[in-house]
Structure formats: structure tokens, C-alpha cells
Image 1 (spheres, rainbow, N blue to C red):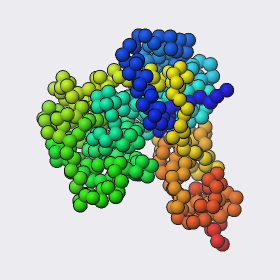
Image 2: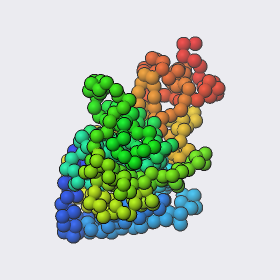
Image 3: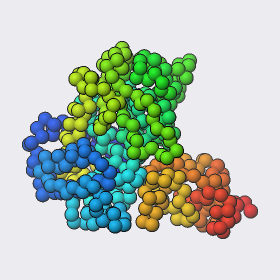
Image 4: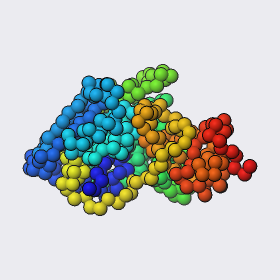
Length: 443
């Protein structure tokens, strides 16, 4: 039996596959009632451990329009998880005969990746904590495709809470892969996390440059703006002052709400939050910019611009149905996506010895430690850098050991290059190394 195809990260889809989904979504959007035989007899299960309106209902609408059925668990607090059932067991039960595809939203980062390890049917990540929200990103990319006809080379402003918005994190990765330019205008104190910036720099060749956003008017008055561009360093060197890259015009403004449910205890809050209103959109650089928002909104977009033809956030939500119809049909083998390219595949290995080196308390490897074996991916060999395979955070350690030789090294040691990944052991300090009976390399 062929292993199911999952959508855990936007990276699980190649650029060609995303474009193919756009083509099918265009067909579904043009005649949504004409495809009711596509998935007849199939069932989608919605497992939502966090609140949702648009994502859950658009998936269920998409499945029903394809002729399938839906099972809804909109409040998993009333499910067996409240009795202590692990996510892995829940997924094995639901995927073992109840449903043909699982749509999962969970508060723990990396939960969808764990679910995919245990599910006999496709798993779709509908949001995992502050980590990723790939189907919202697919919807956002589709809206740019419809409104602008392309993504490469577009100038896209991301505004608001860029620290905790999983939608933004997935969107940044996708925009970088498609070759768009990204202008980050965060709420002060809620800048894009360093691990997100680091990843687009290392994997997609995106250079972060401090931006001059005076032309954006009051949209970015107090923001410490950053310009993320796929232009290569030798091209950037043609400009004499890289610390003052002037943003001339914008194709889209993507506003996000304050993610108050994810504020950490030590944070004091947002203060006066950024707001898009009629005066904000009067800047000449925004004359042709569409205004996007993943919704729900609070006060960060004034209702006075709802009727502005540049405001597309309600169209954006409606277009979530045809693109999710295309995604569901493809994962269940009802439309041809071609041969998977493996473009986004990253090999991972279990943490075989020692403590869990992931520093993220919201990671599924931390929230369900009895049921989850920590996993890691390698970012670089010299110096050795590794990330959590679930939540993507960089692992924290002072030394790296070899489980075969029982020697440990500093992360910048050239000797680590000769150790196979499945023999690497991450050690927080010398005491931990000695407790596991490791000795310094070269002794």
C-alpha cells in the first residue's frame, strides 16, 4: 500500500505543484457545484484542538462541494484527549477507519508532523501553534495569483504581529521560494523571529536589509522595518547604502491581528497596535496595493476601508474554498498532481541519547514527552547546527558526541563531519557528557 501524502508544511509542495493546484482551483471557483462526484463516498475528519471558523468551515465546505462527507470535532477538549489520550493514538483511531483524510489544528508546534508519522491517511496541517499554517499560505498565494497574475518579483508588506503569527511564518517561506520581495513592518517588539529570517537566508538565498519605509506613510511610522529580497549579495553590492533600502511601491499589504493567545508570561503586551485606515492607504506607494488579512480581525483594519476596491480580505476568505477543494482532491488521489518532486523533503533522525535539546516549551516533543521521540534535522556540518524536526527551532547544546566512539566535540570541530547523523548526541554541558560516560575527543 502506498504511503499517504501529507501537507505539514508549505515546503511539502513544490512550486510546480502549487501552480497545478492554482489551475484546478480556478476550475473549481468557476463552477463550484459541478464537481460533486469528485470525492463521493470519502470522509474528511476535522480535529480542532484550537478555535477556528474560516479554516474549519472552508475545509468542510470544500469536502461537501466535492461530494464527500465530514466528521467534525470542533472542540477537542470534550474528546478523549481530555482523558489523557495522546495525539498519536487519536490519529491512529481516526485514520484507522473513520476518515479518508484528517484536517488537524493543534496548539503544540510540530503536532501535524507527529500526526503524519502515525496516520494511515493524509494529514493536513490547519495550524500548529505559532509554527505554520500551510493551507492559509496556499490560500494567500492563490489570492496573489488571482489579483496580480504572478508572485515572483512582487513587493509584499507584512504588518503587525510577525513574531507569533504562524500564518506569516508559512507565508514568508513561500514568498521567498517564489521570489517575491518581503517588507516586514512589525508591531514594535513583535518582529519576525530570528529562526525564520535565518532559514530564508540559508535555504532560499534571501538577504535581509534594513528598509527605509517613509513612502509607506503612517503604516510604518514606528516600525523597525526589514526588507527581505531574493536578490543575491553581488547584486545588492551595486547599491551604496544597504542600511537604507528605500521601498518605492507595494503590490500587497498583509495585515495580521495581535496574537494575544500566544503571549508569553514575561511579555507586557502590544500597547497601541498598528492600524490600517483610510489615511494609511493614502500613501502614493500604496496606490495599487491590495489589502489582505487572514481574519479574524479586531481593530487593526478600519471598517471604513471595507468598501475600498483594494481591500480583498473577504474575497481572500471565499477563495479558501476552491483552493482547499483542489488540495483535498489531490491528496486523495482524485486529481493528477504529477510525480512528487521531493523538493521540500528534509531527512530527520531521532535524538537517541540524552535530554531533549529542543528549547521550545510549546513543541509537541515537550508537551507530549511520554509519547514523542525528539527528532532533529541538520542545517550545517561546519559548524554543526541542528534544528528540531517538529517545531523548526534551532537546538541548544554546548557539545556534540558520537554514540559509537563515546567522544564529544565542540560544535565547530572538523571531526564532527566524519560522524554519521544517526550517531550524533547533543550535550548541554560537560557534566551531561560525563554522566553518559563520554570523554573529550583527542584524550
